Image (cartoon, rainbow, N blue to C red; front, side):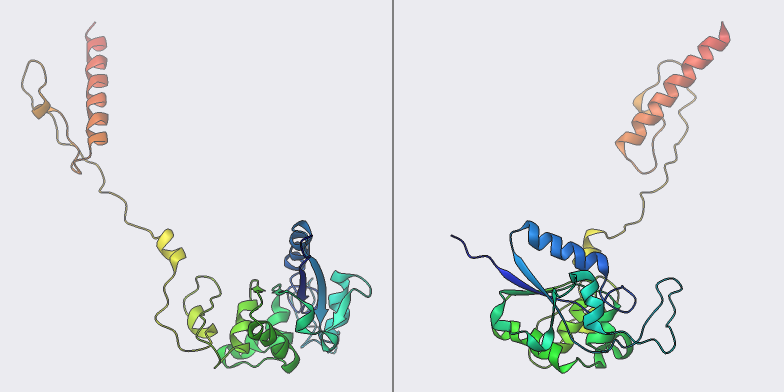
Length: 242
């Protein structure tokens, strides 16, 4: 019988502005379940950096919320383990959903960028999976946490999408100039020249190919279109003469 993989899911609270992105967290758990993996939600038992109203998008002065308690809203009562009690040896992989809590509660990337630091307990846990050569999945902003955690230890390059400067700001070591495969796949090129036609010769008798309107871009399709227009014009003239 195949072994059931057990995956640690590190949460950063509840709510994308100051905790874990709820949709990313829930869909992660759903995907793991659909693939037959067991999972354990974890979070540090510590206060969030701040509390943000998800109605106004503004910080709530004086409000205090606990990362573990907020993460338990996603995992359900008693199903979110205190990170201090977790051991890398108990899991086969790690997945980290995104949300601003990752960049505010687990590390200070939201405020200091590449100069940010990581909570010691979070850093030790994430590094443990790399040391054990176990898979690590980082969603949305979470690659920034991975880069800060591995700073000075690896040449692995991580990105946060295709934004200019993201590669530089999230690499553990100075990278080569950023290259975006996404940009190459969707690169824009100027449109073809605007079609213009030269008038047909005013000679009498059947029109020759040399006398046909031609597209200045030389494209065959445009020439066919011009010939069609010429035939329609001739038909209209015949009707008008009756």
